[in-house]
Length: 303
Image 1 (cartoon, rainbow, N blue to C red):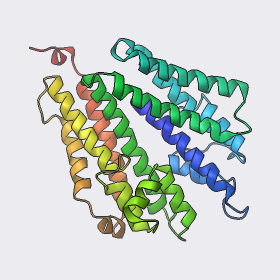
Image 2: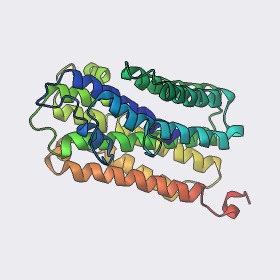
Image 3: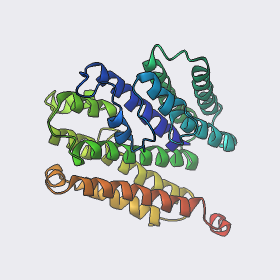
Image 4: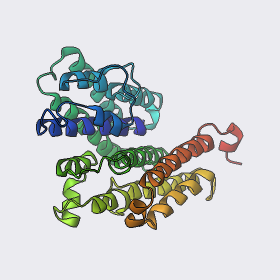
């Protein structure tokens, strides 16, 4: 549930930022060419690319046949919430259900077509509200810790992919001020970055902030720390003890970011380093799933 909602919010935010950037582009540079958006989201583009904001919203928001569309993610999160209805608070269920219904109504009525930013903000604000209701109304026990693992594991993987697109595939040449602003806004980091480094948008500083900052909640390092902490708490709460595979993998990922140096990352092969982060996130997910969901029933019953 947490991963699906985080993915929906991330996709909506990147769409919102790309629509803003398109307003400042000339027809010979980017304009309404959304190939960069698809690449940043790691999505395979089938058929003709959308050529207008309306077509983009149709494809990435409301196309239920695409499993990574915003509507598909919100629907999957709602379905998962229904399955664990007795474990979550009424406020959590009401919020995720309200988000699902609002998105469905907007898609059916087509009221968003004249203001595509409205539908993006609907999802972004809805997911933020769900997270706030969760932290305020759900006991911070085992179930809440699972939500933290899902949210921050998805966040680490998403932001790694966005940074990889900008730094490792030639996108940083030639330097473009608007694209660096777009990258920071895509990670909700523009204001936090300016408070830390002022408005000097240096590529090295941007990479360091988004990957290695220990205080910003959307940096990869911060997310890795939260994943490790949540998995350690789950192991304690379930009586599994410390040192499980998922916890070890999360600790290894966190340590690699704790001791990372941005000059070494960018001077060697940024794509290899960032791809290793994405692979580590996938390993942590698989290990946690194997340990706590697909495990034999005997191992889940206290002795």
